[in-house]
Amino acid sequence: MKERCDFAVSLAKKMGALTLQYFGHNVNVERKQDGTPVTIADRSAEELGRKLISDAFPDDSILGEELEDKNGSSGWQWILDPIDGTKSFIHGVPLYSNLIGVQKQTASGVAEPMIGVIWIPALGCGVWAGKGTGAWEFFNDESRTCRARVSNVDKLEDALFLTTDCYDFDLVGREGAYDELEEKCRLTRTWGDAYGYYLVATGRAEIMIDPFFEIWDAAPMLTILREAGGAFCNWNGEETIEGREGVGTNGALKEEVAGILRRFPKTKTPRR
Image 1: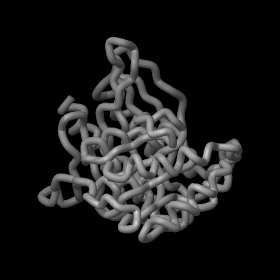
Image 2: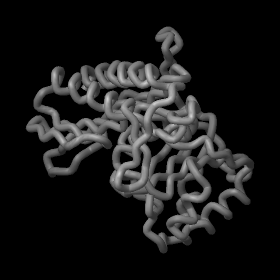
Image 3: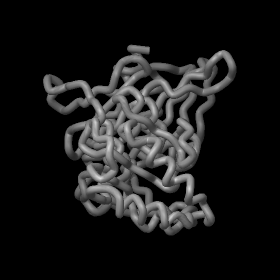
């Protein structure tokens, strides 16, 4: 476990360093079938991550956003999002992240999230956690590593509510949930993608919500937020990275937020 934790943090930094070679330059942007953007930086970072994982843990499986799945026999699976926030990346906004999640198949056949890393290379900071290790904020300067803890805010009127894009709520027919949270929370901002979950895990925000996303967007979040004292769940309050939606909170506000969200079921399927 410790070996994989250490490796995951190192890997995130290496993938991040590669993306920085392209950041701020006029890279060519392609559109995938779902309409989302992809660049050479996305693909190159994932290729690097896959090679290094395969060299270090050849029997582990790998799932990534940009390339085909790699099967394994060890029961361990790595989940990679080489650039979370590609739209920020291509516009020179430094809030994109490199995401790594690791899960292990249990005796009952269930995949359990074990390790999570969010690394924000352009800012030189991130957060990682392993099951039972606590969550840790880390930096380019390793001497600054410190324990990551969620805030103790327990009232929506004092909370900072984050999301990646306000319009995403409309795309799934849940704009009412956004309107109510915006009205009840102290402040609302679109400091989103994985950066929003980083802010919740380190006590700088209380709520981060994505109305829809994929497993590689969610893979690190459950472990990190749980170990930081918070919670990550779907709109029904179930703690999972496979719900194709995400709700990160400081824990104290989980039930109140989940209560609001349950009143607004999805009525549309988003076209990305």
